[in-house]
Each structure stands twice: as structure tokens, then as C-alpha cells.
Amino acid sequence: MNQALKKILIKTKKQVFSEIIGNNSTKQKGEGYDFCELKEYEYGEDVKNIDWVISAKMQKPYVKVFYSQKELNVKIISFLNGSTYFGTNTFKQELIVQIASALGFICVKQADPFASYIANENLEICTKKSKQIFNVNFMAEQLYNYDVIGKNMDYGKIIKELFKSIQHKSMIFLIGDFFNISKVDLKLLCQKHEVLAIIVRDKFEENPIELGNVNFIDPSSNKSFEGVLNKSTIETYVKNVKENDHKLYTHFQNCGIKFTKIYTNEDPIKKLIGLLR
Image (cartoon, rainbow, N blue to C red):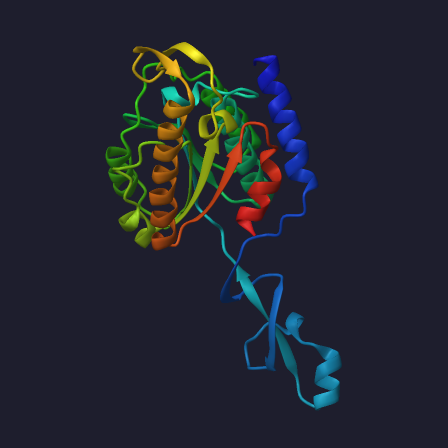
């Protein structure tokens, strides 16, 4: 395994397992640890749940009722296209590896099974459903070594394939830079699953500086661009990015999708914990 990837996994695992992250619970009553209420004992109920202090005061047996613990089905979808091959501090692809690994370790810690996918022009399974740490390591290795050059995003196709392929109700994490989102429509997916979005960006992408004459290569299409990166060009570009993001945020809000944005110069753990709480 690549030494840089080993460092990412060791650091991420240490952070996740040192954070206080509670187990997932639902509002359904049953076996669990989160207290719900006291009620009168009924024949056939587990005597281990009797609250003897309250029962003595009330002169009749009372039992504790708890919220049931519900195992989540988690799907981690990494959008790996050419535009993730960029970063002034850390490449966006590497940040996606950190985020996906952190989510995987959180699943392991909470004993929730997870599966992972790589998405761009096609949707492919990265790792199958598992609760084991080796699955996190294997996923990270696949994402880290994935060749994103020449890959474009087809959001419309990917969302349709996710809707068809994920049968059981799941918690779906979408991780990507979410540029050119005209074909992003998550309404149907959100009706069937709980969707959370993690936007990965580099500060330079949103606020570039004047560089004068430039020669860029688009890693998604391998096409070169020659031009002048001056104040006027930057203003037009920034305006387009803001319009893209306004549409994206509005769509997320309309679909009830929780989301956060993580930059390449930030530590993703704190923002992930905030998103999950």
C-alpha cells in the first residue's frame, strides 16, 4: 500500500475512533440503550427491565421502555471525474479518499454495514457490503489509485442507476465537487433513501487570482485552454460558480438533503461529525 495512503488511513482511523459518536437509534420502541419511558408491567414482558425503585414507590411493577437500535445500510458514492485531479494544498481526489475512509470507519465503529461505489460516466461497485475494517482499507486503496483523467460526470445517468441498484432503504453519502449540476435531480432518490451530500472544493476554484497568460489542460477532456486569466475573466467565472452553487443548494434544500462543504485545506472530520449529528 502507498505510504501516503497509509498515513491517511492511520490518521483518519485514529480521529474517528477517538471521537464520541453515538450509536444510531430510531424512535421505534424495542431493545436498545436510549431510555424512552416507564410503563406498567404487562404479562410476558422481560422482568429484567423492571424499575424496582419506581415499582416500590408506586406499589405496582413498572418497566423501562427503550428506543430500539436500528442497523443502517450505508452507501458511500465517490464522484471521481477529471475535475477531482486538482488541488492547491491537497488534491480533491485525496480529500474524497479521506472523507470516504472516515465514513467507512464510522460505520465499522457503529457496526453498520456499508458498501461503496465509484461514479463518473458509469457507476461501478468499489466494495461490497461489509462491517469490517479491511473493507475500509480496500475502498481507500481503490479510490486513491483510481485514474480520473479523461473521466466526465454524468449525474443524470448515475442517479438513475443508484435508484435502480439500491433496493433497500439506505443512508446514501454523495461525495464530489458538484460542478455543472444541470442534470442533478435527486427527488426520486430522496423519496426512497436518506441522502447526504458532501461538496469537495479547493479555495482556488471559487476565488482564483489573476495569473495573466495561462495554458490549462482540462483533466476531464484532456483539452488544452490558452487565454488570459484577468479580472474580467475571473469575475465571469466566479459568477458562474455562484449560480451553479445557488441552484445546487436550493435543490438540496427542496429535497431535504443535509449537506456540507469541505475544502482541500481543511480537516474533514469535524465537518463530518457536524453533518451526522
